[in-house]
Amino acid sequence: MHMGAKPPTIKTVLSRIFLVCVFVLLVLKPVPAVSVPLPSEGPQRSVILSMDYTIYEWWLLSWKTSQVLCQIYAEHESWPDDSEVLYYCGSSILSQWKKTSACVFDDQITNPQQCAGLYLHLANVTPSSRKVEVKLPPAEVYISVVGCGNAPGKNQCTSLPFLRLEAVEPLPNEQIILILGTLNGQPFTCPGNICDLPLSPTGMNGVEVVFWAESSYGDASKKFNAQVRVIPWGDFANPDAASADQPVYYVDVLSSQYHQESLSSCSNIWQAFLPVDGAPTWLNTPSLSENLVSMNEYYLLAGSLIKQGLVDASACQHGGLESNGAANVCGMELARPYVNEWQNSFNAEILQVANNTGVPAQLMKNIFSRESQFWPGIYASVREAGLGQLTELGADAVLLWNPEFFTQFCPLVLSEETCQRGFGNLDEAQQAMLRGALVQKVNASCPDCPVGIDLTQANFSISVFARGLLANCEQVNQIIYNATGRSAGQLSTYEDLWKFTLLNYNAGSGCLSRAIRQTVTNQQPLTWANVLQYLEPVCQAGIAYVDDISNMPVSGEPGVGSLLATPNPEVVLTTPTPVSTLRSTITPTSIYPSPTPPEYPVITSTPLPDYP
Image (cartoon, rainbow, N blue to C red; front, side, top):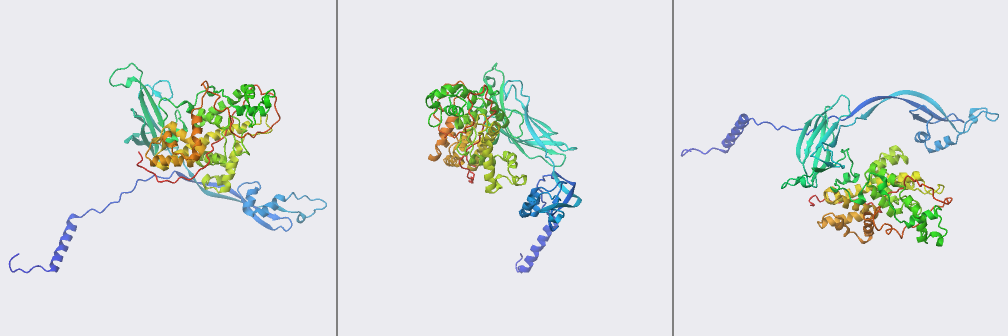
């Protein structure tokens, strides 16, 4: 600035700033912000169909006055049923209608107005149509293991196999375009409907696979998950020395989409692998029912057989019975052949249910032994029924935690429309009705049956019992997730999770939940040894129950017969017409029950995602 020049005014400075801003805007021409849309789920899999139907309008009139009392609309040609009359007309008119008999003209009745009650008149028949939305089936992706080799065993391979993902498009004229996902965090993409992923050793915890398929329909399947474990076994894997051992790899897959050799269903619920060398004996499911044979001394069962007249123990002191209904030593000796036959007469049914549900067969047999000594007539006032002594609280667990079973059972008691609400959304009276119906359904007591047992009820109860254990597995998984924010299999072993399930079944979810929460709070691993030390005194009887089930001797082991020599259950037996001798072959296809957790509180805890 030259000496003597006047400084610029504020107006001049503001003008210059404005010109600079205009210049910048004109020269730089900044690009406007562009919004990025979120990925679309694609078109909805549904179609709108036009369906023709006929509306039949019925009038319910009084014989005496010919007055139309109500109109009933039905979509069938036959007369309206009672539920339709009740819906359109109310209970009072329904009662009048049900009391109305046929109007027959005779010497006393010569005019229709002399007839009592109501009559139906078909007033209109109207063809109509409606639009119905039909949900179309989605694409699915299934998982299997291929290229495994010919090694014997259910999960053994002689070479590193491939994980095959195969997608299915159920819609005609559509096809799978891609299969996508991640294997241990690494993305993969395969064109078409088959994708083979090479596997490598994973470590004991396995790796996660996430996979889905894209369809020419314009959408994608839901995302599926699998946990895959590949473990090399033997000296062949020793990097420091050559070995003549045949390569062996144990390959396990946990996924709802895995349709090869199925593991325990609870394994999938927990996402917990079985031990590499197989499940322990008490959690085993043999291939043949003969492997479930036991020869245990059950004094309570012997007493039941004597009391029912199936064994003649009149030569023994007190007729072979103790005051509590169990057999004395003399009665047990006479009943021994029949006790052996009876306790094994359910083996085939137990094995079939185990194969259908994935619940270990030996576990079920051990529980039946502990709960009822295989006599399903032991219960007091039908509060505990079947081989597993199902109570209403146990029935509550099955219906609440096993939606698949609830969907099948509920319509046998309540209307389809009511059942669609789900067990948790029913009112208390409806829930109580379902619980009572389920307990009654597994109650095999039958005074008119030859041996006092209804074998049809017994067959049904084994299946109910297995599904009750699955419900307890679900509840255990939820308890651990609520306390830690992680699935059960990430924090505990397969065997310990079954022990937690037995405790949940016997002592109740409140006992298990509080002990799990205390173990987590103290930052201890979720092992059975750690959790049981936090059980409250009122819950500690469950420890002996779990120990009895998990350590029970099986066929051929020493000590069999010492476990249940002194039974505790109250004996309340039916007294059918006595049968002097046991039939040559007792063939009750099965007898069964369901779990008995005494409490089912809603668990609402804050997850701890940083739990190690």
